[in-house]
Length: 371
Image 1 (cartoon, rainbow, N blue to C red):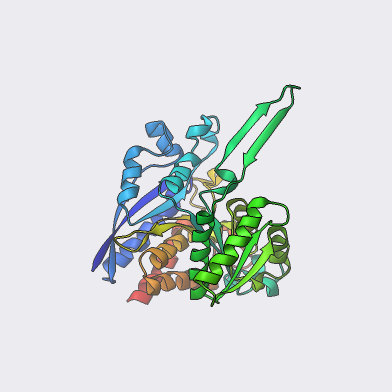
Image 2: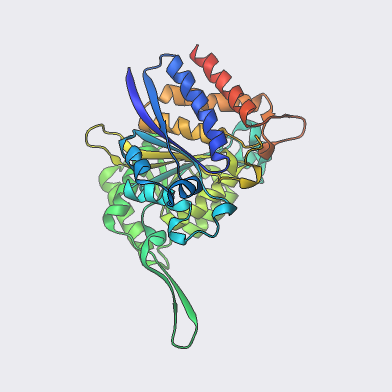
């Protein structure tokens, strides 16, 4: 049996509540004698770390992250820390983890569980069975380019500048990850950029085409302008499977895809780095897409499904535990099919439950499947 080290960073708000439900599932896996077991450590991040250490993540927590086989991350932020200096804001802890460990590949699935097809703002026939994976470049582009500034001009006007920068190697590596993912799915991949008006878009197009030809000619590649991709996601979302794109467009398109599934609070994500030369596994961080929801913190109302599904992604992409990942995902679908709903996905005639009861119901399904 192999023991893997997990660093749990619950963060702020509902992050603490939903992380408990992941710990419940980890305990079940450890007790059932599956091929891998897990050793966990916890630490502070976000506002909780600011309160304790004056920074959004301490050097001690960063060292634990470096030693861990995977990082399981909750959520950060809240009104309490709105006025802290920009450089130590709660989100700075997450950004440092991404940047220091070069977690360049952000996987954001948009999956519409059959039981939630009616909850989408789109017609049921458009989203039922939807399973899209948006692959967003996460450590470069507009969010990291320099200069990034607001300056005062001689005439007194202010000018804001954000710089979008990409290199060939940064694009090549995300294309290769996309091709690898597409091979495990339908064999189809779209690349979304704005080569008609942006020089970085031209580079994305040219490098994608060349890398695809050299690395994965067996994968079907389609190029699509990012604005057209946004429109097509609403018009006919099932035409897509894997979509690769840059940091800015990926931020927008993945949120759009997420809302088609019925609730932003349902969706997990993974941020992967390059494979470790010794283990072959990438450094990785897994987190729900939703935020810290300070308005419902401590009330037992949070939906833990995105957090649990993020852990399932960790099993799949960090530890090759495909069977166990499938069991967790099927358990989520089964519980939803049985009519249990947290407040954010509540539908008429179904049973409303809180965070703990939803987590226990999913855990019971997992335990039964592993019996």
